[in-house]
Length: 367
Ligand SMILES: Cc1ncc(COP(=O)(O)O)c(C=O)c1O
Figure (cartoon, rainbow, N blue to C red):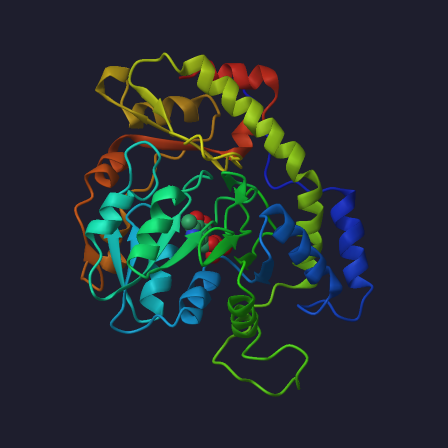
């Protein structure tokens, strides 16, 4: 019998930290626990500034606002992501331009991004899909050559690195999610990261309804919103961070076991993780099957589900075929790889990678 652990998990440490917040008259965004978490998360991502926030959707909207992006501008996004990557662009009044992904990394293809650039393009949002970073060696020079702002949607990539540099520390700024299913979670939550002092000041103000640090509480200088993370969430996140390293080690070990036991299987291809990805959080274990595999993706999904192994048969559509975008409001480049993944890709959530040794063997055999 395959035993899959529950997610999320909490223990006495979270309760102890929550008690500390509850004993303070300030439970909200001004509790000292918030700054404590921000410092720890910035260290994990090797980035100078972390501004915590309510979730990883509003963070993207605020990043685009801080970048001055609005009506008439185009922002290049991958056709495969969670919808928030695109809705953030639409909500600031700009046009999302959907481009294809690479077939096996599941990340934006920089060549497709380059072909989509027009005089209206202002930014690229690179999503680090499933954990491993998009090809930053190619996206950074591309953004620089065209004077575009490179935003990292690192919602999946807590703890992940590219050549030793943390996700969210490489582009202009990064955005993270701490929603319930993420590898670091407080049920809901988010964070913005940047190495730029100026961008950090702007982002902090936008998250705090336009206030400036150390100035009068009722003076507002920018059209921001209240996107503050609470002390209660920060306490939970600090507790989660304390067990994060051990969890990553376990996922690395188990992902390696499953992949090496199945690597020779005809027609089954796991996510390609470039060697520049020096750390991976293993948010998702992603794969694709082709006709030589002997089972369709849907049959594989059915078989895994019957064995009690959680599996998602990928997204039901590329973002541009979401009902929201069917009537326009976007530009769509040819996306054959994205379309193919809808038919033949799948993922296992990270809690599968935290199963016991015997279950991991059974999971490998299930492929
Ligand atoms: C790639 C990506 N970006 C943004 C988000 C939005 O994050 P949140 O759910 O915290 O709003 C998600 C959430 O799953 C995501 O997967």
